[in-house]
Length: 265
Image (cartoon, rainbow, N blue to C red; front, top):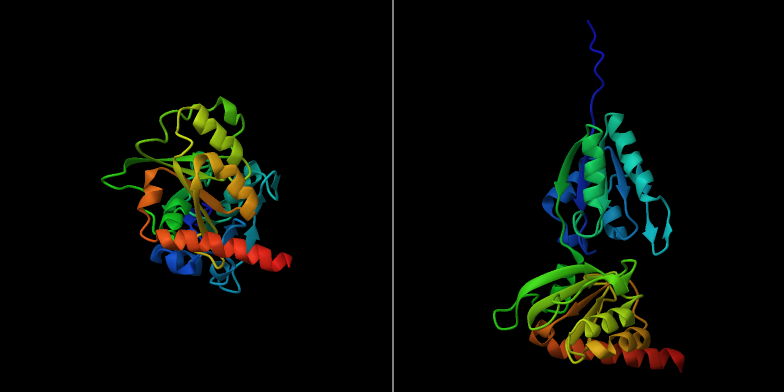
């Protein structure tokens, strides 16, 4: 007698890391090679997408600030739909799925639908940025705590960030370029010294990466002057002065300024 049971698919929520394909985990690379279909974010580097077999279908659900190609509920429904067809679905995300990747929302939806979910962690943008600038996020003499926050949260002025940055602490801000000046004002208002060191790492681990340093009070001006764009991570804390490549941070900032002058000549 033929079974009426439909083969159940599954979803792998996979972190593609900060960009450089060499920073993929082996598990992520194997998942890319063996998945039946790939649903990927826009920030996944083209070199990683090139690793997908030519005959594997792929669907882009790229998101940009204030404009989503596919809204999150639609992505959730798509994952359930494809897995319900018995497929092994690779949900490929930049960074790590569970750090500002909305992986938690997708996993909850899939679990409620009875879909098996596997999480494959990836190197988050904060770790990629720290490596790019040779900047330790913790240091026995400078910081014993790290906090990750999203800088694009609505109602920024209503957020209580007091205690997140200051002596002995490091604050890493994702998606904060567009609100950098407001973030600086908010942190100073909540008690952080205007002279607190700040680093901005743009396009960490990717071609054209830049790492620049400033003081908290000058953060907004730095972003505007250097025309910094996402993806970029802002690091606030005394660890910025502990960079193993402090001279490189300064040199990159000077190079960027020189390039701007030459292009405008």
